Image (cartoon, rainbow over all chains, first blue to last red; front, side):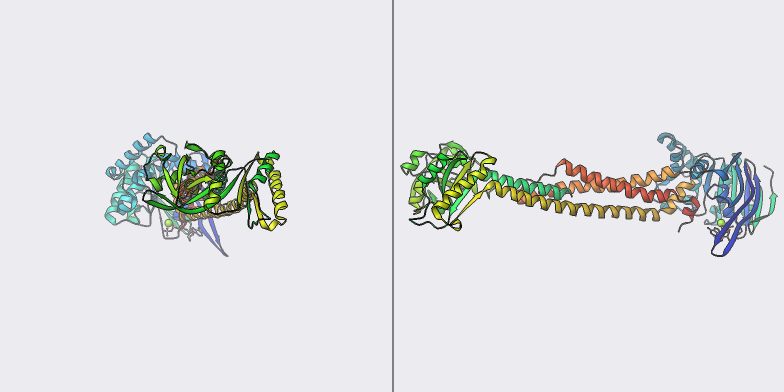
Length: 227
Length: 360
Ligand SMILES: Nc1ncnc2c1ncn2[C@@H]1O[C@H](COP(=O)(O)OP(=O)(O)OP(=O)(O)O)[C@@H](O)[C@H]1O
Ligand SMILES: [Mg+2]
């Protein structure tokens, strides 16, 4: 369960202050599929990075599964990330010098899972995204859609409860985008909480709930489909 | 570093070898100008050596290069006129046959000892040394009988100590028309007696010549000591240079690590985003630093050993790397790797994941 309470994120650059998040309060239950939409610069990524414990708010409280995350140290945040959260990035963020299977098993290494278990789980995740025969390829040898699926497999491998996707289809053509979105929907059907950032309304409509941001504030929060 | 220490030891060894070859407890006395009124007599020296306990033996040293012929083969070879004591002064031995004896000197016998390499030159590569003893050789036109073969000092073909004839000094004086003996070799008891022995000989020579410029007396031990001192200084300078280059290398490693941290900030961001903590990132970079510097270290050591050996072979010195040099050099290179790897790694590990990820 994700609970944001009156979150502010304020950037001070020179003498201009930017309220990237301007008093956000948001409650997301386990198993929800939430799309965060809004114009460029409205604060979507900032919001998601805070949910994913990659960034800390200037003020406000963030409670994840009953734990006040805003009080945690850097290493404790790493611990939360590796156990609860899987990221899917717009630019895939694969490590170029590692092959597919090594990229996928990376979160499992940080979870201190044994080599044989790691390989088994990583293969399972790759199979899940339909890339079981590409484990020895390197990211440069894959298409954009394939790379994004590797990054989804990596997000899945550690079996996190929350999957965060920031514009996962942003760099893909529409057909591949639909495939990737389908995969994300299936993950939600399997019980994962999904938070998806997009500025594309047609994609947002595939989610079960849409949260619309503008200038760092929530201006709309609509449930489209019941979970 | 390894190379430098190795070669330094090698040069020292070479010098020690050379002096050992010369006979370690040797004093050489040479007179430049001898006249009928001012000259050294064998009998006089014999008396001197008999009286002084520090000096143990002495031998004349009458050296020339002359033509030597065996059957149809003719070569120019060093021939030295010596006494029966010469071999023991120079720490040489007879490998086969017998030494020149007192009686040979007195009766001016035309006999000779032959060097190991000389046999190959004059009698052919594969001639057994046993066959040579008893043969005749024509030295400067006169027939000499080979009575013994000297032991081989070095397999190197440059070894002058293995390519010569030794003949009784009395014969040499006559054959080569040397009225006075220019050079004498003396052996002394032990290192401690070197100084006294030199002084005794010097006093004797001064009595004869009344001018220190007319002769020279050289003590191998003192030359060796001063040579070693010089080499030690050279070694220190070389080690200092090696130390500086190690430091420079260390700064190089630090720079490489810093650059790789900067280059890989995004990668660090990704790793932290998917759950790596500070320790994971630190470990990764330290391992990389160790493998970079450790590998460099191992390569350096191997290269050092290799070069030492090659250079040693080329110059015929006994290069000796020594375990201490290896340990110190590899220790330092790993230490530098860890220290200079740790600092930038720590910087990388402390990055906020979002800042690292945004890094372009
Ligand atoms: N590190 C930063 N320093 C200063 N300002 C920042 C920083 N990160 C974000 N901002 C500002 O915060 C606001 C929100 O940024 P954010 O990235 O959340 O927008 P977004 O909704 O994700 O936009 P986009 O759709 O373009 O990705 C923007 O005005 C941005 O300029
Ligand atoms: Mg964004």
